[in-house]
Length: 141
Image (cartoon, rainbow, N blue to C red; front, side):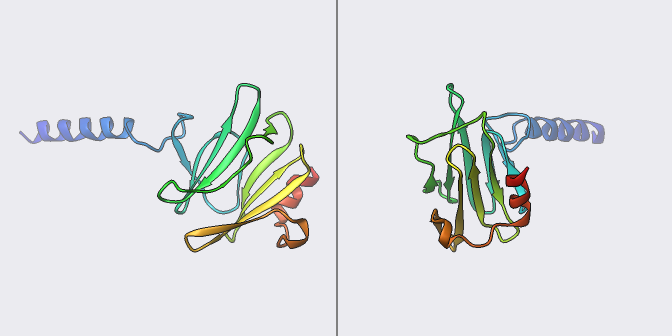
């Protein structure tokens, strides 16, 4: 009787693992990320209580959005000014949890600063906090 329980338990564990919502093998599922992380490919990324979605279209352009825990949109790249997937771009989460956006297409460096359950998107270069060293290195490469 004990062997049957073990076999059933193993079967349930294996089948639950295959149905997990968060795997790295499937583009349609999410990946948990930490601070000091670069995002350079389309997908769904989870950071704290936020979801970052990077969508690539058939014409090789990219847009992205930041959503809160309840899937309310906090920030989205304008769909009329997408960036090219063939050009240099990144989304970087620094060690303070700020989300940085960089792309060569428009020579943009922007930041989304998380404040409680909302956030502030800063586009003006004169109002940006100091750019993290890791992101500066990426930009110079």
